Length: 407
Ligand SMILES: Cc1cc2nc3c(=O)[nH]c(=O)nc-3n(C[C@H](O)[C@H](O)[C@H](O)COP(=O)(O)OP(=O)(O)OC[C@H]3O[C@@H](n4cnc5c(N)ncnc54)[C@H](O)[C@@H]3O)c2cc1C
Image (cartoon, rainbow, N blue to C red):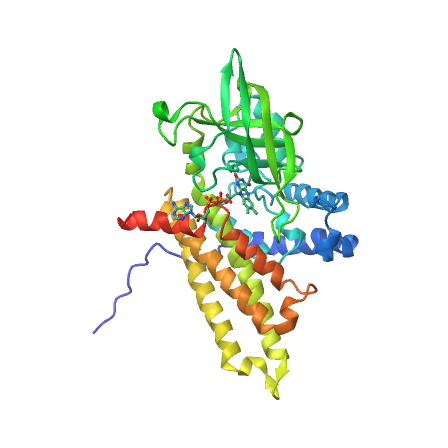
């Protein structure tokens, strides 16, 4: 039977020329700008115990190095390249942003984590800045000169964040904020925090309505203490808001509509976590393969034992599938879809793949897997954290179950 060429479907997994260029420029940037900073820090960087003060705060040299990475990355056009050009970004697609984050994460743990804007950097919510907010908050953040934090979680609520207790009440021309936030990434160092507070009661505005986002500057709130997560010591803190008085120009985005604003960008946060998890997974698989081929036991490389080789083969299969899912999510988002279900699938899959692979690579390295001189336990801890932040495993599964119509 004569074969006719089938019409091409509109899906491509090719890395386009622009993205390839970005990825290779990122590699050069890491080599030229980031690695020397790590070398200069020496043991202060390589030994996690030396990175922190007694209370867990990062030591000043490390903070300075992080700021330098941020600023140089912004100067080179990488830091917030996914934001629109109008606000100082490069307007790259979600597919390119996903590939860039994954590519950088594939170099393993290090100062490289600060090359592309994370929770401390400008996100689409901040890009809603208007008037004086643009010059004072958004632009310096895009240039890597100021850092921020995003504060929803409280001692009483995490997954159930619309049920927050922090309030902002009108008093004449001003807002008065009271409340307590915890687990806020970059809170100890942020120049300003984007704080979510209830401004209208649930009875009037509904569960997701009546929440407003305010910009609170560092000297207007207290960082009560640090929440030192194992594997991420010194990065999270508690924020206390005690009669903080703010004018209207501190409202970021829509009054009473911050939760809906944030939901618009939910998928991006989950794609970013997925990219990070899958980049680290690639790093872990590479290191696992190296060791499986070098290390010998019972007269042969340990990779010749099925107990070891199947761990790596399974890792590769799981990573391949999760990467395809993440690319599809990024592609849907580029097509203007909110892709809530797909973003939950990707966040759940990618972080669980990283977790399983990190655990297997610790096992493959045996005693050396547990050594502080190797990064594998640090990777395992990071994977554990990624399964909780930006919506826990269970919250992602709830979203998928709701889409299936069973919840
Ligand atoms: C390292 C780190 C960084 C963080 N950074 C930030 C930040 O920058 N900004 C910020 O606002 N927050 C941040 N958080 C907080 C994080 O978002 C919350 O920890 C997370 O959303 C879970 O909330 P929770 O800890 O209060 O747990 P809870 O919501 O109390 O949940 C406890 C357990 O119950 C389960 N559970 C809850 N509800 C359901 C349900 N409906 N169905 C099934 N299971 C359920 C959860 O999955 C979990 O296993 C950070 C946390 C950590 C650890």
